[in-house]
Length: 69
Image 1 (cartoon, rainbow, N blue to C red):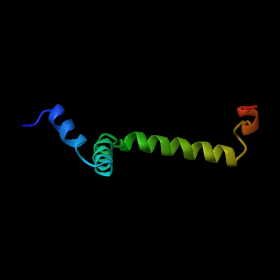
Image 2 (cartoon, rainbow, N blue to C red; image 1 turned 90 degrees about the vertical axis):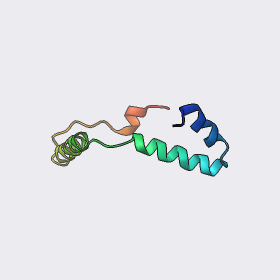
Image 3 (cartoon, rainbow, N blue to C red; image 1 turned 60 degrees about the horizontal axis):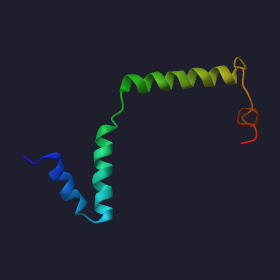
Image 4 (cartoon, rainbow, N blue to C red; image 1 turned 135 degrees about the horizontal axis):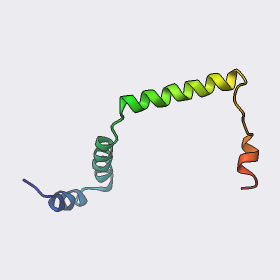
């Protein structure tokens, strides 16, 4: 079985575009969404949108939030 350093050494021998593909595949394998959290965020976003559309939400214009930056 290969160790981490051996895998890194092999990967570093690849062309830049191939290293990018490997890195992207590894990162994507770590970025698995959690359906419960995704659903919670979706529900919250919809709740806020409905509150905004109904005029039940206090809002601040972006210009005021960002100021002179």
